Image 1 (cartoon, rainbow, N blue to C red):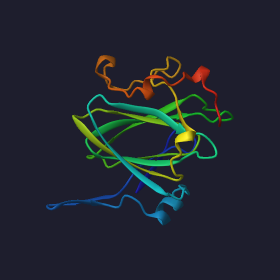
Image 2: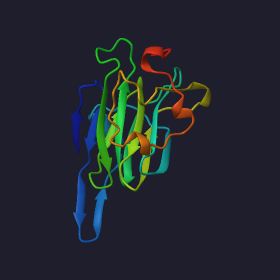
Image 3: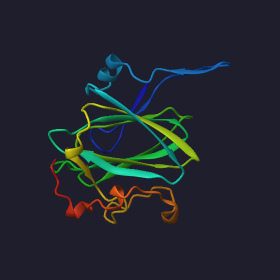
Length: 182
């Protein structure tokens, strides 16, 4: 597997080795020993999956301490734009974001450490998104950041009039108003 560092410390793009032949393909999606050698020391305790249609934007979500989460995410059907925003107050990249296209075709994974908000937009007609978390979800620790924050200026690659958002995601604070726990 190839591990690509990003400008945000700890955020990694993983390109697993894909074995293809006339039957299809095989890919190892997680191997604790290999991922630890690559610097991903998170011990995953919860797996989640979502299905969405074109234009759905989920995020930007995070869990507040002491329930922060690192995530290893992938798109197993379709294509998404995945985004991580650095919320670590003492980080030189605080408030900066990085995005990567994840798809069933490229098999890429995105590792997002604790202290980041995370979200994705669906670029294909449908998408199935999977992620591993290193801490259990706690609803009382749920937090979010407004996905159309002008300071962040994230291009979600979906026209605004075609975005499909949950009511919760329409009401998160902007970065400047965030009571930042990190």
